[in-house]
Image 1: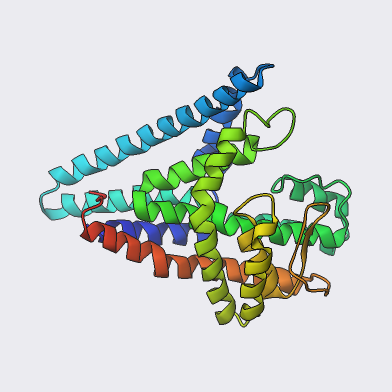
Image 2: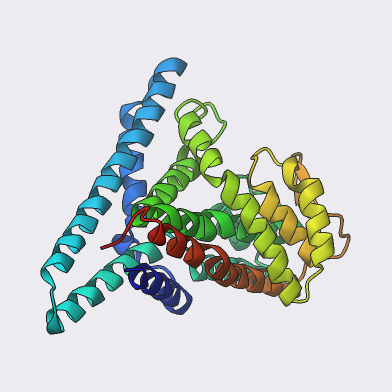
Length: 330
């Protein structure tokens, strides 16, 4: 029944927009992160080859575990629906299915959570508390934040908002549309692994190699598709969409990641500002100071991009794939 995933999707977005993320002790992504942190200790060694193999096993084992749990839930829901022939029981089971899928799907996306975290950084900057802003920023970026000035803190914050559109919103929704709840969770799991150990440091360069490359593969299409949806959002938000398209094409490939640069460059162009990671890249060519107004517009573009992506890709893909019999939720 096509209506089930569509309603579950609507419920997931409604919960996120209204309430944001649950507390850590209730958040599946946090549980996955804790599992990864424990398992990764078991495969550390002094051998680069063994650590790479260990990193591969960590990714495979965690993905398999998460997938099995989601598929067991899916099987349980299908079984309940097979028993629901008519009457009030049918309605209750359908409602349970929609709520279960919607609540779990919500945990793979982070719209309000990103907005809230970025707002805390901007709030600290408004009070000239650069130290606190740097601490909060360090929680969402991989770069060192200890010596960043005000403008580079704001730049990094808006870059994170831009990248999160793919990592924390459209990426999971892309794979949800194609593979259902298990697809969204696999994307979320791989992204969590990459964010935890996907660093080119002495400690993680081998352990995180496979996870980082899996993340690159999974986000290749979503990052580029999302960038075009962001341009459409900037048209609606009266942003500089022509410049956004130009900067995306020109600067998207400049980052070390083959994917992250596209949404960031698109956002920089739409806002007519420049993003800069010291000694790494410059995206966009605006020379104006990045302000609170830019931050608010970036958040609005993030939210509108989410809605447009769902309308233009996620729901149509669910409908088409359901029609051709690719999969079904129940």
